[in-house]
Length: 545
Image 1: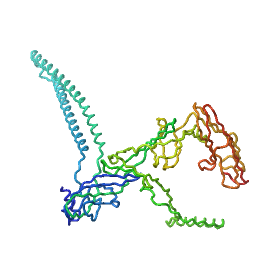
Image 2 (image 1 turned 180 degrees about the vertical axis):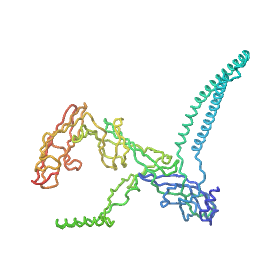
Image 3 (image 1 turned 135 degrees about the horizontal axis):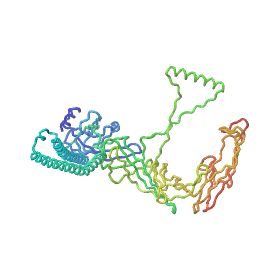
Image 4 (image 1 turned 180 degrees about the horizontal axis):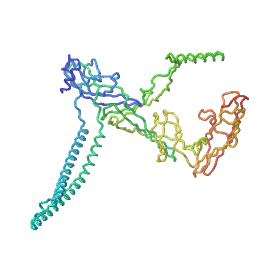
């Protein structure tokens, strides 16, 4: 309390006796792919009159400009915020953290006692050895030479008995010390485990921000204050496990989310909502700027270029930079609505706890199920084997978000992980579920006439003939889609002709100029051959690139 009273000296003093220090925790979080909206709900009790509700436990990194406050049970006045010169908050001891610290301290004390006991035993061994050294040195004493036989015999007996006793004492001390050291090994392991448990408990950052909320209560009673603000130190990203069954074409998308936060405070039992809204990205449409085109005489253009170079050199000497204005055009991100027509949100049914800067929490969002059409897709231009593709329409009624955490499984076997593009409700997609090693691809160039060698071809004709083969070694029948290409032209003087046997099922496949697609069934043990050739002609003196 003395810290509270001292801190109040930093606030306006007219109503300091009526100020109420509140303790708050995060109660609800709405997470975005980048950032979050934090909600803190704090109950309070007031007497009739004017008061200040003081919250001194917001993270210091809280963006104070985004703080919004609502009060229930009293009329709200002004709200002041600061992240410097903050009143120290009440001590809030984490029971688990305190218990772990106490355990480590007790084990360290036990370890010190054990080591001290071993050291005392070692001292006994050293004392016994010192006694042995003394007894061994007695033979060098000149007085012994003058002793009579009886006295000498008695002395030798005493020395022998004492030496034996000292040797036995040293041996016993060494044994007890080694035994005690072995006994400390279990204590040492327990201490290391306790220290590891303590490190696993993430302490919160001490520095905090503060809010002071002026309220006027018409009568004594209870109320609550709700504080919301937006942060950047938290995010979520979707994760998918895609399971495909070959025999039925059933495709199941197990949805989840990875959640992280580094706000400096630990979240305990918060109500969690995941939203696809992206407030940290582009939120307004791009601008279309006027497009001025001009024509110039070639000589005039050359003179303008020379002048521009000279002016640029002069600008470099004068410290000025000559540059045309540039406009960044960002691609708009549009989320298809599952609920409100603009975005989809997921309300997690149970409270969650997330430690700051440590936990990477995964929550489950349910499973989407649909049917896929399977086909083996072959691209002999680049690959030596075909790949299993699942073509499907998103008839789940929900948005499938983009994710770099998409794991693919075929008949229960893990195939790989890769990026998954956004698939809106009603959209279509082709997903690959790995190679089909038994569908072998070859593409052989049978004839090529390319004129002069090099990057540029300087003759006015070019021809190429290739043979494409797909061999089915899998022992089962497959439906195939084979893709290849021929060049295309947008210039009247550049003439391109091509032919294929058999003819492709579709030209300009997937709206890509010159991309050809063949679709056919390939029985087990069979081979499909395709002949593809093209020719290019252009005027003499021109260069083909």
